Image (tube, rainbow, N blue to C red; front, side):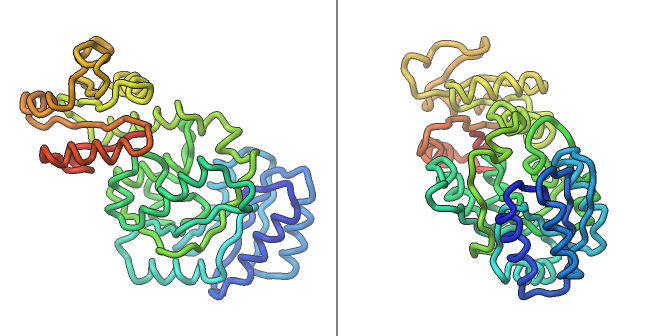
Length: 331
């Protein structure tokens, strides 16, 4: 549990955990070199509740803290939560019961609500709406290259799957998204409890806003890296739908990963007929003929404009391409 400077939020987070209706669990609180009142607060809570185990360490950052927590967990399931969030009283009970009855699932999340209401920005709310629309394994796998499809502090995971993929790794991009993508590549299954069980605090100093690993460029690097190792491995022709900013930036990283790009598709008359990265820019109606030139071509829909992906989905469905098999959305 990464530290957070505001004492009241840490108290709220711990209180929401110790009052869980599911009692058979241990709280591993990793104090990653906090310089505020966090050590005292954790010590006081540990004296009040024997389930709380505090691990104090010099500040090494979230990756080391997460792996330290994993190593300290003795049980088969690990639930994540940050020190400034809150969870529903039945969160752990529901997620534990789900994993017990669904042995094929490696990671179970839940629906998430942002708080406090006056701090939740429009962009974050748009992300939460999309996030909460993905519940089944099919949903999550289909859109995993659009954004991180699971809220990190909302999940409960099987420890053996975490160990299998090497825990959290430093790749220069978001550690949680990297974990989901590695699990995706090795065939792990995901799911969510279709209820709001986590309340995710929004504030300007969140790592997603202040740490360069969470930049758009680094998200695109992660997507290109795992696309090249998974869906696009040994693919002779990849066509990117979108010759705008997202398509250009994604194509740069894909080429660095050795992916064979064949063309771009765009609806802008000013771009159609031209070239991008020395590759032709096609009109949507020309795409079927290009696809027929290759044995197993793949399409990436890389358009960031709201609503565009649904329109592209309709066009690709009409020509017989299956999302998650022949094409993927990458935003």
